[in-house]
Length: 396
Image 1: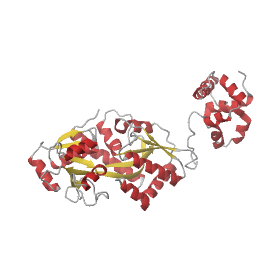
Image 2 (image 1 turned 180 degrees about the vertical axis):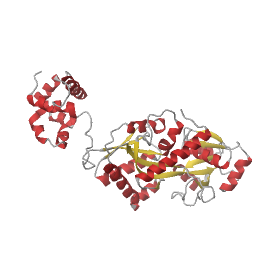
Image 3 (image 1 turned 90 degrees about the horizontal axis):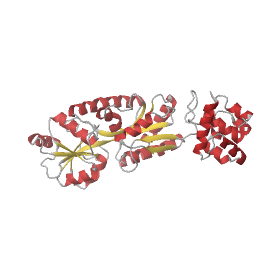
Image 4 (image 1 turned 90 degrees about the vertical axis):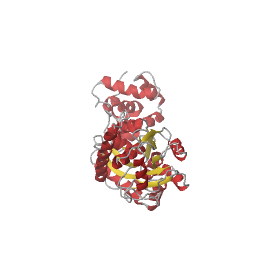
């Protein structure tokens, strides 16, 4: 095929003609056009501008300040130009205002559906869209206790347009629970902001002869191994909160992991198991209906969802365990992106109406600086690493 002079000009930055051919053919294949670069001729003859728009070339050329090229190249040249410029999203350039007119991708390392992470992540995504006047697209990539989604996010470009929405289990405990993780929360990410957390609450079966923390701890010590406690699985916050309690009190209870938290709660009410370090969001309704007995919230302050339940700290046993949520970006993201994401999220958390919505989802709002999140993450990794190692907990 004879090269069009303008086509040659547009692709002159390519290192070899074979590279140009391979890259252009790859794009044509995505559009269902066979015949390699010969397919360029058919587009040129048909002059299908819709295909050009699908490749995003017009916006890309405009973003680099070359709108005149669009008219000069025509369809053939545009597609050839795409071979050297369009395979990867345009990187953030130093000094370029952030955000530009492109979506922000928020990775949530959990499957879509139930749980607290999904409604909270979507709420934050929607509000960031409004605050930044920039579309935030929430993507679920669940599996392996969040490791699949986190590993994916760690490999995305550090351009400020990729964000990880994650939580304590994935960020603070997985590096102790799993061997040879392909990602690391501190090595591969920069912290943005702590959104808030859902604390664990110690609840027991109504038939147990204990109504407060001191009486419960005495009872457990009197009958070591007689009480069974349920969790949502090995290494979950419910499991590790119980291990933390056991280590601090020198008590022993038998762990019964469940795949279904609803079934575990039903068995708690039926006295098949006697204890759970439930999440406030999951236990609230059963507590309000007096179907289980709350002992204490594992937090430094009372939960807005359970204001009448005292904290462990109030009862003389400082102990904190919560599923907290945070935003992070791939390591090396632009400082301006981190700053604006942090400021926008803090405004969301500080807004009374929006803050109330978080509370209604069971989240105790937090906020703060990236540095505060970095310090908190470091503390949580150390704390839960010690709990995991002392308990000998492993998932893989």
